[in-house]
Length: 161
Picture (cartoon, helix red, strand yellow):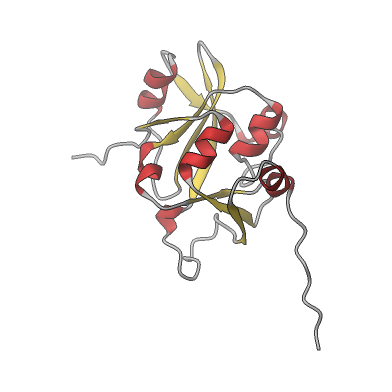
């Protein structure tokens, strides 16, 4: 009989477990186009690193099915303008590579302002990266926001009318 291999928890999962924050570890590649069994793709949230002209680095979290409105992000964060951090600078800024950025790990190392799209509050839970490509966590949005001291705001690009 094949031994069931126990998947080692990522650092993010260890941090959440230690803090007694309810979450569920998932193995899924959120960057893949095909939907994951039983999951609504809009439940998967991406963690974007941006830089503001006044505040420096800031983090925006929104559904992977949506586009971030840099204009809204600038306004809520007190910047005149914000822009995405180039992929080549991502790891030295956040400590994570593209596809592995996550608010829990980033908060452990940096005090960047973090904003979560308000749509997360309408869901039972959201899925964010667990700090490694192919690994994610499912967590209640409010629990995540409380833990990483994030604010909820409207971050989504409005569909062109």
